[in-house]
Image (cartoon, rainbow, N blue to C red; front, side, top):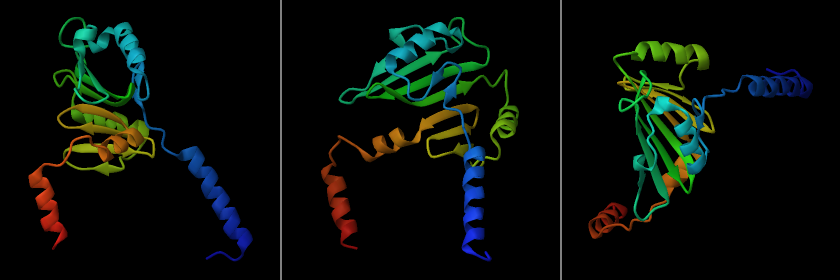
Amino acid sequence: MFKSKKHLFSYLLIFSVSYLFFAEDYPKGYKGISLGMSFGDTKIALLKDSDFGYHGDRDVSLIPGTNKTLIETDANYGHGSNYLERCWFQFTNDYLYIITININQEKMDYYTVFTTLCNKYGTPTDFNPQKATWKSNEVTFSLEKPLTLKYIDNEVFDSTQNYSNIQSSPTEVTQKMFLDEL
């Protein structure tokens, strides 16, 4: 295929440079809210943008026994956006790692949002009847049915999935022992 090491090197160089220029840069959030923000900065940004329908600390939940916090907003309640409904902002250790935005189905449809995202970000990396997903090393961005946008910080999400402070129940332990003997 390659006539010499020089041709191979040239090919690899062109491929590497083109990868840098054409690597997918998927969104990491919506409006002034983006993955990686602190809890305090997110609250300030939500207060500045009435589209989300954030009403302050009453929209905040703490998950007992963990370093996880959730902000839930309701744009339908109050003076929020006509296009947004409920939104969730999930934090671990004061770090925003998941944003979930429900879009008002009376004002927008799945096909219009899907087409817009494809025009902006290209073909989804994964597509099935339930959702379209664009994924890079850093972020997973998806459009889920009926009409939900989701932004996930892959590294933090993976680390939270691999860690659990909940001990296995006796039933789970015996089940694992049984399966290990197969």
